[in-house]
Every structure is written in C-alpha cells, then in structure tokens.
Image 1 (cartoon, rainbow, N blue to C red):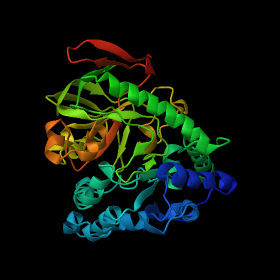
Image 2: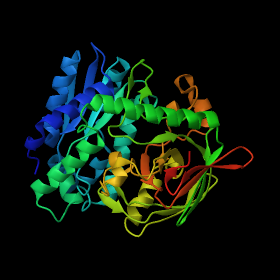
Image 3: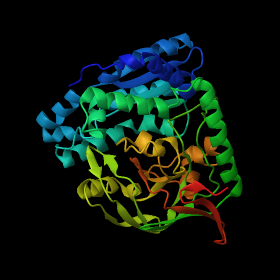
Image 4: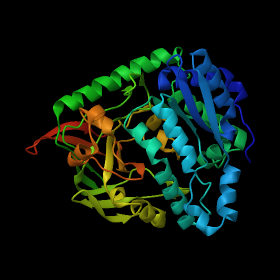
Length: 416
C-alpha cells in the first residue's frame, strides 16, 4: 500500500496532464502562489505540476500530502471521541492563503472502498467535523473568489476497484488510458482541444441563461421530476471567471453545464441512473421523492444507511444545490466505464447535487450577499454530493413561468 506509482509508458502524457492542470485548469498567473493537495501515490504528477507551475511564474507551490494508510489507522485505532475533531488550524491557513491570492489545486484519485469496512457512524462524524472546519476555505472556492481546479491521478487502488478482474498493473494502465482520453491529454494539441471544447460549453450555457427557464423537467424510467430554478440564476460550465479576474477550468475533465435550483421548488420523484460512490460505500439504485424542495422519501438497494446519514447531515442536505445537463454521448459516457469517482461519473450523465449551492450560478453572484442568496433560492449545507439521473432514456424539458415546455434533451441528447 502507498507505493508511488508513475505510468512510465505514459510519461509524456503525464507531463501533458500537468501542463493542462496549470495552463487550462488554473490558468496560473505570474507571481501567484499555489496550494496543492495530493495523495502520496500521486507524487509523480504533483512534482510535474510543481515544475509546470514554476515555469508559468508561480512564486511558491505548497503541497499537502494525504496517506490512505494513516487515514485507515484513524478509524481502526482512534478513540471514538476523536472523530469529532478536524484540523481547523490547517483549513484556516488555507483560507488565509486564498484570501491573499493563492490558487487551489487538488489531485484526486481516492480508493473508492477505503472506508467501506469502517464504522459508518465514525466516518460520518469525521466527515461532518471536517466539513465544518473546512467551510471558511470552501466558501471562497464556491464563491469563485479564486482560480481552482481538480485533476485526476490513477491510484492503483482506484484502478483495482474499477477493473477487479485484471492484474493491478493492467488495471492501472487501463485507467490511465481513460484519464488521458477524458482530459484531452492525448490530443495532438491538448490546450487547443480544451479551447475548442470550452467554446462549445460557453455557447450552450449562454443559450440556457438567455432562455430564463423557470424549471427543468426530467422524465424517464422511474423519474418524473420538476426542478425549479433559482431566481435570476445563471448557467455555468467549462471556463469560469474567478473574482480575482482569472479564467480557469475548475474541473479537469468536464462535460457539464450547470446552474442553481431553487431550494424550495423541486417536486416529484427521480431514480439514479448510475451508482454513487460515497464514503467508501457504493450506493445503488437511489430513488427519492421531493416535496416543496425537500427529500421526503429516500431508498437504495445497497448503501441505504449511508444514504440516510448523508441526507441527515443538516437541513440543507435534503435539498438541491445544483442541477447539471450532460449529453449521453459525452466522451466519459461513451467509454462505458463506471469510474466510482464523482469528477468523472458526473460528466457521464445529467445530474443533481444535494447540498450547498454556488453563488457563481447567479447573474450577479460576485456581489450577492448571503441574505439575497438564500432569498433567491440558494441552498446552504455542509455537503455537496452529485449523483447521476440522466441517460439515453431520459428526456429534459425547459419550462417557462407559465409551465409551457420546450424540448431541451431527447433520449439524452441535446434537442437543439
């Protein structure tokens, strides 16, 4: 466990991914600091990103490492009262760095089953404590105060979970191939490929913002859901302009356009179209019912206890903070893979997210006060958990204020 794995046969592509992280994801500015978090397994990529950041003019790159073995030790050996403790001092320091202009970069690639055998109550308490402590830093991210991005690394444990029938080396190689394809690192000119892709996402989100739909209606097997949209909402996706004046891509990869639902206006029932990997558990066949914006019933064929704990985190955890549209023909969907990682799986299908909403998904989000954010329908929560509700069997309509419907997606594809 926790050996450092580098995809030696993909060395050039890994360097390209590092370049994408700095030039496309962060669009790093000369003199800017970078605060990076990384699993120890991802050190090869973290080092290449550090090289790329300094070449781009970074003044300082600070990397904070996490280690699965130490994480497991906490849940196996820690005292029960310790699961309500989080390093607030560390997160306060990160928030201070962001206030002073630092960019945020996270390398992700967790073992989806790392905590599967651990006490779910302890996992839930630890996550809640961490969410509370991290909130000052997270609010700067969700408000787009800074340029930030997430990029993947093929942790062998992640690869084993995706391809359990393959030897570890072959499984990891297959995951790397999928990552390089999804992030466009394998394109002849990755930065140019991202520029073209971003132009498509920009056009789509501008169209949706201009249409000013009052709600979206999803219909498909097990689903008839009306998601009311927040007042004066705006659609986002692809490149994002931060309040510090820098335009970057928060997620590498990304295929979605998304906005903020109204916290009080979701009605109907919906069935997940893909499993959700959450806190080391694979939650399958999620089915929920909304009334007045709140989940009143929630069921899953596996992971029911974890689902219930998730939506009981706080009052806002039963309400929506995001709705996103993704065509069923997206590259990640076409791969036919279940990545067991939200960064990828949310870009394979249209989805909703329970919990915290984004201020940037309002027309004047950069100046929106907290009271106005809530008054317009923005949801507040310690969590933000995306799960997939779209597929080639799901249709989506845009509804105007009078309830008139306009086709947006048919059989999972854009209707216009």
